[in-house]
Amino acid sequence: MKLPHSCKREEGKGITQKVYDTIFQDEKIAIIGYSGRAINYTAKALGMKTLVVDCFADMDLRRSADEFVYVNLDEYRSSEGNLDNSAAFYLCKETQSQIQKIQHQDYIILGSSFENDLAAWTQVSKVKNYVGNTPSSANKTRNPSSLFPFLTKHEINYPRSVIFRETEKSLDFQVYSNIESSSLKSLKIQEMTENSIYQTLINHITPPFVLKSSKSGGGFGIYLIQSEQEFIERFESLKNFRQPPFLAQEYIQGTAMSCSFLANGSHAKVHTISEQIIGDTRFGCSGKFTYCGNIMNEEISDPLHENNAEITPLLEKIAQGLTEFGELKGSNGIDFVLQQRGNQKLLYFIELNPRFQGTIDLVLASTGENLVYHHIKSSKHRELPVDVGFPDNKTYLKIIYYSPLDFHILVDLQGLDLRDVPLIGSFIPESGPICSNIVIGTDISDAYAKALEDQDLMIRVLGLKSRILDKKEISNQ
Image (cartoon, rainbow, N blue to C red; front, side, top):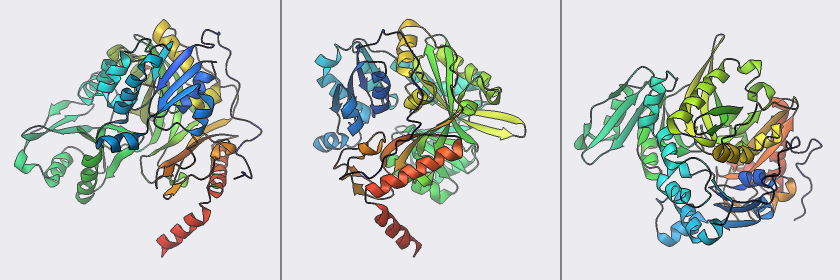
């Protein structure tokens, strides 16, 4: 099918990458993760030879990576009859099968999903030339039982939290807050009903509260609980798809934010800040906490901008503290909520991601900074970057488009200049991601307008416009 238009615009896809030394030119790098397209894009900008092992093998990845290995999770799980194993488990399995090729790479780096499967991370981190955090560093800085006491000790704000996990004869609860950490009673096995769990939780957290697994990701499997009935329904769903321990957290209203920082094992450097786009139904997502993308511009993202005078010192304190605590290395990210109270800005820590963030290609587009370069330099050579700076006054937006209904991809969307373009024939479930896009606007509203314009073009090219209108008409009846 010939595509009538493109999402390309005169401003292109960002500023020119900063000039680095040519140390990585033609060096070989293996990228292993749930989705490797953005990391591959960034590594190729350095002139590296890439081998990517991921779970999508998107069209644009296939066209840019020197080699790729597609880990088809549906086929793996179907052939083994096991739906419980993580994506990282199968990524690790495929890595082992490709070990003769992978062990001869100059660098091995990881993308997402390994933070929730430390056993798989441990196996992959043993491969020669692995670069980045150790599984023990990730466990120390993500495991609530070690992370929350650290935050409390260092007087870092975070939502009041209750962890609950099932043991052989009981359900054990632990409550954490900025003020104190204390054990709660264990419920006897015969009392372990959803009702009794809910009643225990609301004795310590006032609804609405957030319910999730401690191993959640991408905003999926995270629920806002406002009543007992809602808890019963959501908890049952959570138990079916996510592994314990489970986490109930005070719901902090504010702006969802993210911070990227580099670490060398003992020192950290806050690199950029971005505003997260969460649960925006305009882009097809259905979950309140679904990750939809990020916004970057000088005012939001430059740690040295006067607008960030209050929060940058707090982020530096957190990044430095966690780096020392967990001996973190390379590219890391902090998710936090920014709350405005009068003239004061309050920062609430949500979680640490000890890996590349979804903003990696947005950082490259908006600043020219290459995070693969900085990841290797900080991890292997202990070199931290200087202050970033933003060359223009434009707004950069990365957006993920989600599907409003079930359908199969029948055209190659690569011609629209979108990113993470799925293979022709791929099945996209309702509320599943279709692809991503980076747009540049004069301000935030202009960037949003362009992102929605591109979405409309994509929907029309996919032939979904009439089906979406029919679905809306039926739902309104």
